[in-house]
Image: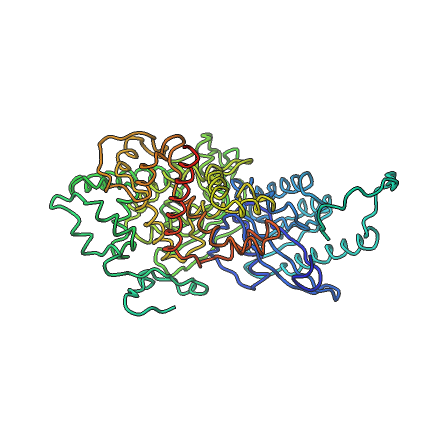
Length: 207
Length: 425
């Protein structure tokens, strides 16, 4: 796997309602640009970002998906093998937060592995007056083992934090599994009996 | 590559790019070619004194070299079935007048429900709750009527209004709930808002703006642009009827799968092994008709070639009979037309009886097939997972050759029909 680039690579998928700013977040993060007139994503687009966490070079393959509810059926093809999900909602629109909770539910049920999650409360630049009410969102994030970051793709705030949080946790997880589980051990209680001679070699080499 | 001699005139200058968007705009390959492109002179010469159009001569030009940008809007109105080529100038003027009035009425109806419609402003946050309670002070983006883009946002914490003006009509709530999802250019926003109101089954779906924006560029009058878009949606609205479980383009994806299976079984097997047997990775090409794979100028060129190739002279009457926003009625043929009045692709289908059964396969399926075929070696060599497939196809970004794609699509179509015939006998 890691032959394409040095270090470790992870697949990150962005999920969230339409027009909450997923593409803008990614474009701000990867290319440091922002457009007021960002066109809607149809299907999904793909970007990579290289970063170094604790001395380890990491490549994030970022999948930015189309958010509108109508495209919901496309979700699985992107989160299927994802290592992490960044769930984005629009801080000015509570419905988009509800959508995040729906995605989380679906991810927990459907995603193939224990996926690392973070939540971005985007468009913080639009809320001028009151301090941003994220209490509910913060405790929700805690309850699912994710952190919540208040972001603004327009102002460029909070974005590096959320991505590096994901990267750090991914790395940690990879380390832990590398310490304890590799080479993959058989589950407890299952005894592999090696008495039969090998009938045929495994059909494919898939190292 | 520069070619000498018949290189033709570049067409990019006809479409202005906003200065703030000039970065990363792919350049257009389309060239206005003498003797191939439908010229202004040839177009005007194709009308009789009363205004009946010799559609056959027009089609043959468009299929070879597209339409001169100066007349694109008016030509498209015929290609998309807004008007019948056999009608007169006067008849069309009446229809145009009637339609403009109709659009104005619909827009007014929408404006009465929500005053942002037609105001030059657009909403970017919900204006209503699902129970129909208006949200006070939604985020509204002011878009100056001119192109100076003096945007300012009036914002505050969105609050649910205390006023008793709760909306009870479910249809209106549904419509209002879609408004803040529409993309943010005021004319585009107005047209899509009105469309969402008259075609409630489809409403608004991301990608529709890609299809609508060229109409606004080509047709000065907002109502005329709306009607061109509405006719285009007749062909494509099925694509936008997605549900939680399925996407609207499924039918076309299935056709695509069987075409690739017949024409390039190796590629099909490879894609299937990678978990792409559903061909969902080709979704975007169908949804926005290659708008993202081509430069702006080239997508216009590709579209007009497609519509010319698919042209059915009864398109106007079928749409007109069917009323607003319903599917084309299959098998409805009011008058016998000469074969020359049909597009080349359509003729091929008629010859082979390929229009029977589920109806014709749109040419877009063969265009996607041509893109896959062209990228076949790369897909076979480099794609190790479905992610790679999507990445390779995404990288086409603005780089597809419309002329070539069309030529290859027609070849594949012929080959496919031949193979099917071979199977039948």
